[in-house]
Amino acid sequence: MRVVLAEDLFLLRDGLVRLLEAYDFEIAAAVDSGPGLSRALAELDPDVAVVDVRLPPSFTDEGLQCALQARRERPGLPVLVLSQHVEQLYARELLADGNGGVGYLLKDRVFDAEQFVDAVRRVAAGGTAMDPQVIQQLLTRREADRPMGRLTPREKEVMELMAQGRSNAAIAAQLVVTERAVAKHTSNIFAKLGLPPSDDDNRRVLAVLAYLDRG
Image (tube, rainbow, N blue to C red; front, top):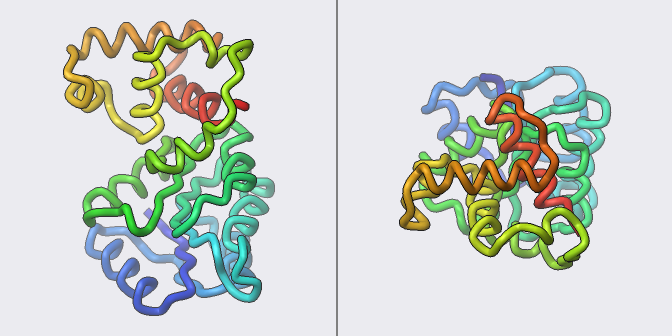
């Protein structure tokens, strides 16, 4: 699996390269600036991009803007954002096209190597990997007349765990219920969101994207 990595801090960038290579990822490019990221994404056609939000030369939201532009040029390009902050406007735009393959993790809340590597693989496969704090900040406006307003409190709990990329088994363990109960909740969620029968993984991604992009 080929990765383009963008991180301006040398020690962190080098550490991420070593970590991903240890788990058999191929680092197609490891860059330290917005222009370098744009070139790498345009020329190397990676399987997934791991991107810091704040890159030179602006040190504002350059990394995220480069990733958004790359997704416009190559719809569905998997992007995992690593950041110290939640950039709400651009995070919503990242989620808005409904193509899946997106993640947003806060650097100081990535607790171990396997957690991070699992998130990279999940995003590369077209899934989602969202930090719970990111989810909470994105869900600041709740409108009862939208489909999400029809979800029960338990269904919303299931949705938040789905957004983190949890499987039904993991959700059941977290909520201390049976997998059968979780399957029933997810079926109700799909119905309330008007998602027709299809591959279950695809419907999970569409449901998560709808949930995160509401409001």
